[in-house]
Image (tube, rainbow over all chains, first blue to last red; front, side, top):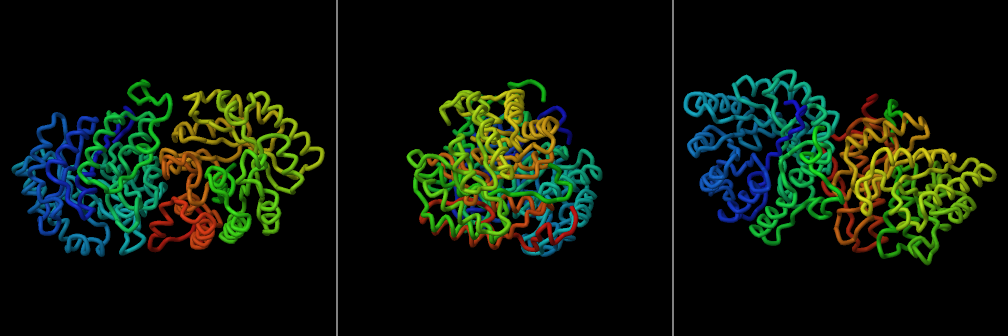
Length: 314
Length: 314
């Protein structure tokens, strides 16, 4: 969890969080091209899809084929989201490297999102960890705490409640517990406090930050999370996701904008922003006409821009 | 310069920085309506225009009338930008409360922006301060250091150079020296270091931060500036300004998004975001069809949102 060596992992979640949030379905071939280009740009962890029933999310019906393609890319940590044990089993069998199960901090969100109480989700997580330990010990299992900073349904979320749910999730034996700002409620001071507390509680099992940019606060929250020592950040190329009736307002933080922030601050992401433009072209080719967001892709790099890796130590 | 009492001043620069950056000219009546609504929403400092020749910036030709209107609004600090002594004299005569003169940190930007060397601009500033002291002692004079974090023309700007120019500007006797990220080059660590150094050098004469959102880093930089103790931030409703060929990419940070950040973090801005929507409607009415930016205006306030003033101390 320490950024002292100046390396930060950007985990691309566009192929999952982005694509599942829009009505259209990208073709399997286009998904594979996009993921290949993201890998070529330096991404080393990509959440490539979710193992959910195709009847619920037809956008993810081809997740197995996409996983197979992603597994062919050298050095790539292939991650997926699963809603339950059944999805986890399918993901394990498919050979993924990492599984994230969302755990809602509020009962209201849990019931709305997966039609299970939080207790039932924790039970599911425990069962997933048992399978992992018995049959897939090298696969990393992460609990992603949804609505950890506030909830569209329940409103304000007490920090103590987020920490209590984090502890319950950690107690199942997962490898990591990350915090998600599912709908743009987080503010920097809260982000700092919660990640510091989570680190105290979980040490190296404190996971990454997943911020949506619903109210434009995503990168501000990243700065606070960095100050707290977080070294893994989810982001989505094109900022896809969220609410289609609030254009540009609700997706994940945009990968290019995050990479620019991190590199400017001296954190090495290993990502090449010019090659990210190729990936962006593939994304756009797979979703012709779909609005993509991002300030750095619009404005370009500043004169004399240098990557952290070109500047020596922090 | 301390935010220990939790109060932050948001200085609205839309009527100047926003309106001078777009080709269209808002009518005097619309400007006055907009400024009236901004004041009604709680803004206590507004940069209402600039005193420049109408031949250069026809959008600002009515600045005197706009100033007269703004002066009628109780408790409002009426600020303007001036490029030189002649503009400052006109501004003094018009009765403004505050004058900002931009001082470029790089010679290239100075020559391009005002066709003067930096030395000539510092001379101008000295002359303005002399007039102020003799005839308008209550008017605040600020030097706004342009391209303080990087320059589209000169590229990288050394921090020592920004501090050297700040010192030269301060030596003229101005009341405050603020730092501007004119074209989206700033990053949070640099922002923190520069404002801390400026405070050490100037104490209470260290002014505010003026961030453009060219690469989406504006609010991330605000967090760093807050950590450094900055208590005044410029912002522009609708994020107007900058480069018209990079939509949404180049204006100032958006006032509503900034206010939301500050209030969420526990800083009292005195601004009412619902009333800001009225001001936004006036702005849009004055520039029908002009794209306005802002995530909070799109997404609305989160459930259970509370202003800092409703929550007690930080």
